Length: 391
Ligand SMILES: Cc1ncc(COP(=O)(O)O)c(C=O)c1O
Image 1 (cartoon, rainbow, N blue to C red):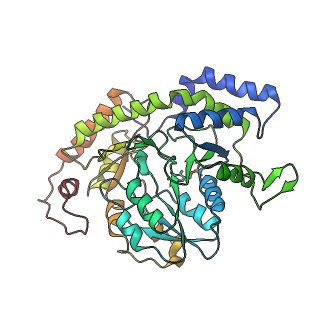
Image 2: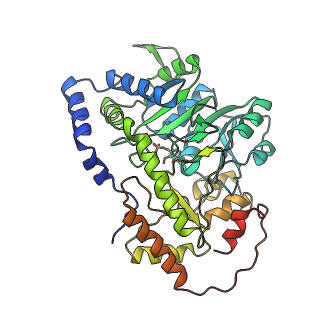
Image 3: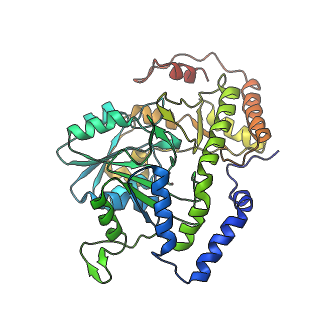
């Protein structure tokens, strides 16, 4: 059996009729940029989020950049952000000229540690970007409390968490801004690049609409410096066609995650779904100290497994000039050496999921490991951590 990491071709063929109709409608209209399809999708996404305003843009990186621009973040400012994220989060900070300052994560949910966050604040800090990684939201109450105390803007990076909830509140509705990526493999994806910014403030929304369109308030009147970052009509129509299915897809992702967890909890560290949280499993990530061998073994079995992400941003060559040393973010560095993402997309069949489970179990039963010893770690002591050491 073959189990790919994703299958966008199968996804298209399942929804071919709706998508083809949407694309044809745009082609027939002759209207390709900032037209009725974008307005329609923005309204629909606002309704999906439940409150606030949505401004479409070209991709999830620009969404963060636009939100930072709307906060007037620039040269000389610092932005607090996790290093355990997709590097585009950091690219967006650097696009403004600001300096990223890295915050460690909570090993249980892979998101920003609010205690470490507070310790990294300086008089230059302007904004904080919690990343709702893998489909689970960060501890927003704790983060918002720190941000409020120090007068910081909060930009939620929701690229991996469309539809996730924290204490009943949707990702992207708690901070000053929420930023979304519609990269094709996301929980809702365009058939190309796409993104959006959400905000509860009408003033911020008007500013975003100008910023994404060369800073124009109306044609040829530039009230502010802006960029070109628009969600085009074809992508907006494709997203509108898919939005009604997102909840169903997220439900299926959760079913698959539950099946994986039931099958694998005794051999690897499975994801922790926090009590207050509705995880939408953009990725299903486990931990083991045998991960390179496991990935190779799975590949031989026809199962594609990946690592999100093998090198944290603060240790990437591109950011060497920031001068972070190994050991500066212990929890981040610990998990980066152990994480493995198993195939996760709504079209996976139960048979494929079971095959992945059996393959992972076969890997562990095919080798005899020396009795693991306890490792010392600043974040050790919680139940999942102890399981981690034994896997
Ligand atoms: C957490 C996170 N932030 C930002 C981005 C950037 O999104 P895009 O690829 O649409 O620019 C991504 C996508 O890879 C992401 O996963």
